[in-house]
Image (cartoon, rainbow, N blue to C red; front, top):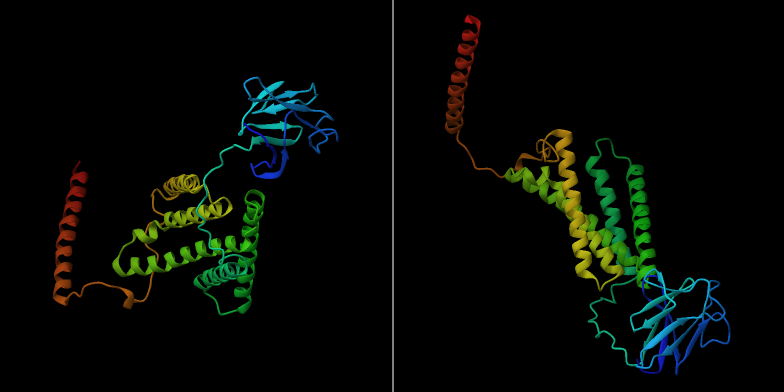
Length: 324
């Protein structure tokens, strides 16, 4: 590790809060003003530790007999070999020392759409959230039209969206330095819009082509969309951990789907969300081949013959039971 040396004060998430350059060794650390790096921490001693060079040139940190000591990986160390990635805790302050020859990571490719930040995505997200709230009320509304019901749904939906996006924005500020409230509103709006679009399209297709599984297992698609929304929230906070967040979201989706299947089995004895397709639309939506009257009557006669055989067999079995 070559001079000059840089002492970095770290946040809990690893971000650098402050960086101070020291030109030569030894480096004295503590709360007193006679130190090379002053630690404004009541749990640090006036002269807490010193960083010196070993005979082979490696940097060694030495505790100066303090009460709280120097903590590394949860353990107290009287002396500690310092590398560019060694993080120590003095009191409530986390520090790291790096030399001028420390190799930094290569430049990352910037894929952020800087023009799609702030007010624009926030307004679009709020519009999508409001549409979802109003559309949900309209689907379940069986009474006469009352504007107040839709206004209440709109207010509750937007309020809930702001609370949800605000919580993510707080986490974004805490772990990613920027708030990005508009982007989180847009992510939530896209997720709700995707759920609405799937519900409409799946109902139409299921009713038109008798594909009942599209509605009977629709909760799993909603879970998958929710997992995708969670992934984009996390990726907005920390955009450099895409693979980790994708795996986490997928595992959560699998667990949620499994719990849903088990709940359906316990409640109704079936894995599906409902025992039958409850979607009923206009007959004109139905896509089915035409059948002639003769074909229909032929099917009825064939069914009648099967029913007569089954009924005769039942009467015969009942008669045998009476003889016994």
